[in-house]
Image 1 (cartoon, rainbow, N blue to C red):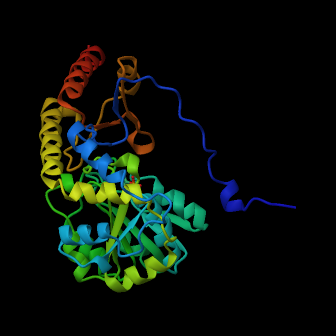
Image 2: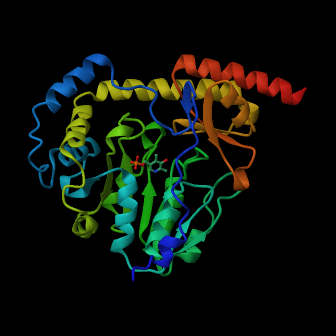
Image 3: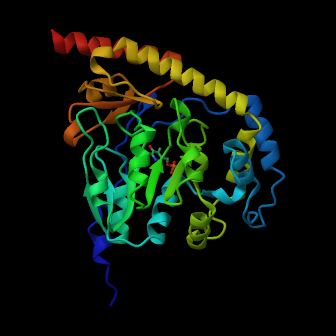
Length: 338
Ligand SMILES: *Cc1c(COP(=O)(O)O)cnc(C)c1O
């Protein structure tokens, strides 16, 4: 007789997302730009030479080397995986401890993987200004303390000084830097000083490869040694590895996109200053209950709940998409203010 584990039975059912026919998708924090035609052709020519009958290369992959070079670290400090989401689950398998610590409102996948492991989630909500609360109080026995900076969905970063205070507890700290490329400063330098720090990065946002499913973790060599033991072999396919390497040959293009997004983010922020929180990511948190209104105009944004009920999270899009968003939101504000 087969039985479903209770930790699995408690998970919400995987439902097909509602059919939305939006022209403008600003709900998933993706890059609004696919690779330009010329670059895509160049990449596909490289992909055509990959032997698909062979497994991907073993570690350290060429991509791990390139990431390490980019971060000024050694390949032993880097692990690539099938999206940084996959890494969250793997990291929770490495450490002892009966709970994780999160700070809501934040990214939902930390809860999800804790539920899979059957461990408790202790929430120390962010403060009024979305600053980190006293997470140190629950450091004892924590399998991991999750810090998301810039935080999804609020867009703010946490000061390095504060992150160091949490690291000083000695508990494993998972610092999710999925949006670091859009922020003023990163915390990669701390990896050299703290063995209990694992930083998560992704190709899904600034690098524009959400469809390739590619993420990476950065940590000390000792921590990585254990993480590599739980990583399934060949987790990343040859095609995605090559796509990731390709982006490092075109960092000027990536940098151009990042500057474009930051400029557009600041334009949207100035436009709706009274309703918008400052952001160091590729999205903005807005105190406007405009999800349904925008959807009728073909623009899909993320509707938030709980403490952020009545708020939306808006991904920064292309100029012309942002122009449409601006005029729709102005209309919404005029209607609701009138
Ligand atoms: C988008 C996002 C990720 C990226 O996940 P991938 O699996 O690499 O696509 C990770 N963390 C946060 C907070 C995110 O918003």
